[in-house]
Every structure is written in C-alpha cells, then in structure tokens.
Image (cartoon, rainbow, N blue to C red; front, side):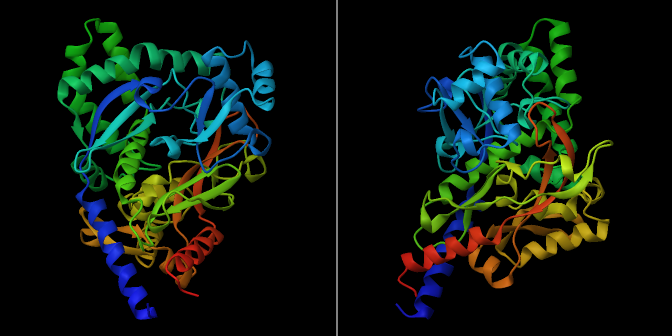
Length: 422
C-alpha cells in the first residue's frame, strides 16, 4: 500500500468508528451484584482502575482501597492482614476494562458490590460501574475505615436493590438525551454532574416510590441521591464504556477506545490495535486544593473516569460548564471555551446530538485520533479529582491533567507497523 492508500484506509476506518459511537443507544437498565452480572469475576479477585498493575507498584490510595475491599469481602479481619494477603499474592488483580467495567479513581470492584448496568441497545453489549459512594471519606479516594465499609454495605443491602427495582419498573433510562440536556444545564459529566443527577432523580422518583414501601427508607434514598452532586458521574462512565466497546477492533482505525490511569501508569487502547495497552507514567494534576492541602500531598492522576473524555465529554466539553473552569483551577469561562476548541484539533468529528450552547450549539469534539495527537503535539485534556497520596485520607482537590504523549506515540508506531508503514 502507498502512503495515500494507508491514509485513505485509516480515514475510512475512523469514519466507521465514529459511526458506531454516534449510533450507540445506551440505556441504564439495572443495578446488580457484581459477581452475578460481570462474567468471570471470581472469588479473591479485585478489579481496579487503569492498565494492569501489581501490588508492589500500586500507589497509596489504591493500596488503601484494596485493603478495605478485602476486609469488606471478609477475606481478612483487618486492614493489616488484608495488606499482607495482597502482598503475598492471595488476591488476583485485573483492570476493570478487561471485564466490561469501569470505576472512578481507585475503581475497586469486588463480587459483593452492586454495579449499575448500562446496555447499548444498538449493539447488544453491556457495561458496568459501581454506585457513586457520595462525598467525603470514600473508597474511590482510598478510604477504608469502618465508616467507608458501612456505607458500602448500605449501598449493597439497601440502596442498590431499591435503585435496581426502580430501573426495572421504569423500563430503563435512556441516557443520550439526558446527557444532551445536562450539557445545556452546565454539566460536562466529569467534574460537574448537578444537572444530570437532578434529571435522573426526577425520572426515577415515581418508580422508586413504587419500589419502596417504607417512607423513611425512601426518604433516605432520595436524600442520598439529592445530596450527592456527583452521583451521575458513575452512570456517565458506564455509558461511556458501553459506547466505546463496540468501537474496538476496527482494522486500521486510529481512534482511541479507552484512556485510564491507576495512579502509577496512564494507559490507552486504540481501535485498530484491539485490547493492547500503551502505557506511560501518569502525570500530576494541576488544580485547586482544599484548605490545608497542597500539591505535596497529591497522588498522581488515577481512575477509569477518563472514559467520559474518550466519548467527548469531561475536558472536551468544558465549554458547556464554565463553572468547572474555576473549580478545577483551569481559569475563566473564556478558558473553558478554549479547552473545548483545542480538543477539536485532535478529534475526528463532532457529536451532533451533544451540543454546547456557548459554541453556537456545535457538537462536542468526538473520536480522539492518535495521529492528530502526535502531529499537533497536543494531548487530551482531562478534568479530574485529586486524591491524597496516602491511603485513607481521601480527596484533597480537583484539577486538570494531560494524558502523556508517549502513550500516543507508541500506539501510532504500533499501528504503523500493523499497516506495513515504516
């Protein structure tokens, strides 16, 4: 093949990739126990955020979350023996992405945890994400004490079953239109989910009321969702995974199908390269810190939540959420517009269903192209929370971070080799 032939083949493959993204029909259909819903999730197995990693290379918050999950599952009596079990190889570790799943920050998923189920009805695939734990001390930021475990048990025993029953009663909640409305309400679906959380609660309130007889229990469910502005984040993540999985494996496509980080390494997957990971050391976020904390306390970036940027939300849609720019230390509302405009340079298309009022209703930039990333020297912008580098402390701020260029360079070299290009 000539260079022109290769370029034409990649363009055609990328058009197919974006066509699949835009044709997706993600619907939130259920909440189920992870061990029942996720095929192959066995005993003594912990799923985590990011590309593959072993215990010795894990960062502080990920180790803390792992120890907490081991105690939660009853595999060890306390955090010290849990850490010893993990260090001795008594637990198997796998990335969420290997099991059709995603998880925020540390991303921990074990058999007993409830997971939301998003079905892409256009292609028949399903994706999974844990329920958002709320604010404060939480496992996704490395929390692992009795308060954290008690909340996780409540989610599994009380909230999850009721939420799942309501979703089944409602026949599922279509998500594409809800995202479109959220963008018009100032959400970008990574650091700001106020609009979509409210829309979801509004849509499910009647079904929840029919599913729960006890009024106090029902009030507790409403309070939990209504008091957590980030509740919809996990829904958006499962939606992103459900949209991107059918894009995997298109021969010749240079479109990114996953970006993820485990607190140590940042990894990407590319459609034409299947399920191979291309990884590099993860970078530190730049942002604002809560009182009493600074960048000296911060852990490098972590989490599967970059799946929302992969579908054109988060940092790619910051123009829709100017309030986020100040919260993450990214500057002014004008700067938020510029972040989105910059992402146009590295994407294949715009999504006509997800539009941004501040950009004259232009669609969000969609389909990250590794060729354009390398040629422009510009990597994806990601909105993110910032975890303390030590286990058990939690979130210390929020900011923006760049994906490492090395990931895209290595992926491009591999794609070139795959297509016989020097």
